Length: 488
Image (cartoon, rainbow, N blue to C red; front, top):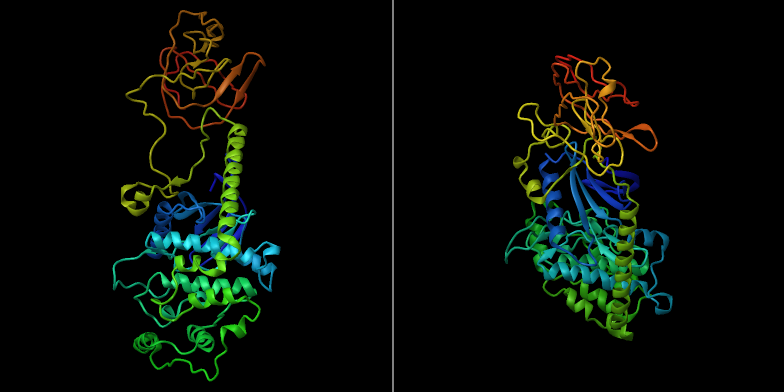
């Protein structure tokens, strides 16, 4: 997390928390999901892998964008684009619901159209989300909606495949999930979408049950008795042994719960809340409903939405260019520990990587003393020096050099002139090294330091000298004679 500055907390869920952060190098605002437990936890790894895999495959204007994945101290972090707020926050500010009036912005239709576009994109790729709820629907400042949190999403298998029934938040859970049916499909997302539609219109959740049984009771009280399949699955479910389906004496129809919505809106809602999943409307059918077709809404809003998305992209691109221009380029990388980026294949196959206790790749950045390679030369500096870690030549772009003297104790006469001509006939000793980033600026006549890194032990023999170069003020740049074995 050293690369990011935490700005605040966005929210917390079952498996992790989401933080608002700023990328230190670029200034980009992002949302980072930090998983609570170690990646060694099987459920955490399974959830994280599912979300990463899905978001790497699914790219759509109405689906949140995954930017990065990394590990820090055994925990996984997912970096997302930051979107301003959620539908839930809008509802908190509007307890009586959002506007369905054209004169007041037609907010509900615009939100639901974009949500349906996102769900339709998933379903067209044979993916179900399984946790659609107001907290997982993000909205930008300009009103662009993005579906997020794909921890429960999965690709559908063939007919008759079984899935876990413990998905979706209770208030938005379809009846087939509540009774424990494991053979379900895309219709569970449609039910959740219908519940959200009613909540956006009224400001209140449609079926706010306290338990699964209470949830079933609230649904039955509004929509009537469950169908035969639901009853059979309920009775066979071992979790409900000794229990029974709640009995309702009087049904309170949807029209009584939502008395102020239009006839088109009620028709749309009813088609999304049918008991039989096979009869429940699809995303395409809901998008073609008269609720969206009247007033030429789709044609007009699609043009508006396209313009808004392009405007946001141009703004983001301009911000990216501005941040890139303002970014300070440092010649040497900072020596602090970095977070480990995780390619998807490494996340899936942890045995292929070697990680130390801090979550860092276990590899040395300092070359060995034996089998020395070519010496380091740092071109492009119009100053005296580029800096070596206490062993060898400091070379500048003008051919200047500083090296240890032969048999002169202070080695004062062994500085190279700026034109590259040496004042002594002693030969230079050039040894590969890790940059220590010291130098001497000819114009300002001062020694500077960028950052300090560690260096190995090395010996110098028979007056070949060394550049000591440690300390903020660059102490002891001159080499002593006959340094047989100097610890560095």
